Length: 160
Image (cartoon, rainbow, N blue to C red; front, side, top):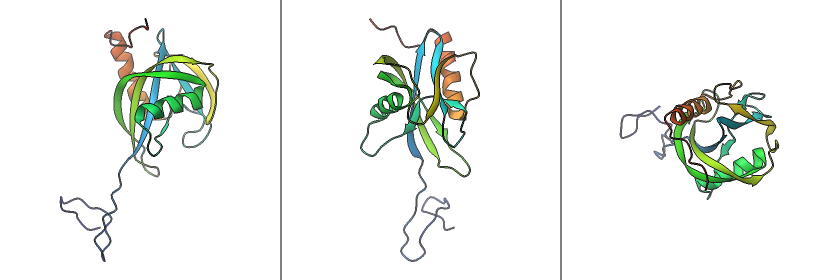
């Protein structure tokens, strides 16, 4: 594979010089917390079918990350949310799958009824110290950091 101007190997057309950058796909997840428990969904489809994770999914073209958060939360949990703030950004994906940049937001529930939807088999509340088997390291890391933030008193302030 040829080297680009910065010395990095990248797929490059030998005839025209076009460089095929392999950028990560943006995805968005949501932390919905109430009294020390968070909403998780059990995956209906591969990858990691049967494992649990945050309500999350890929951004659609022209969609803002906060819009993706609200859409995915509703599609997977039946809950309408209000995004509060960005919690963090995490590297995801791996061998055999797309590389992902996961943006995780903290949000409040604004309405709806908790129910599995879309690509979730089941949805439920789980204590931060009693997590089921999580599908992705990025979700595990985000929840671990969120739990630490709560212990430091940095959770989402109660709604007025």
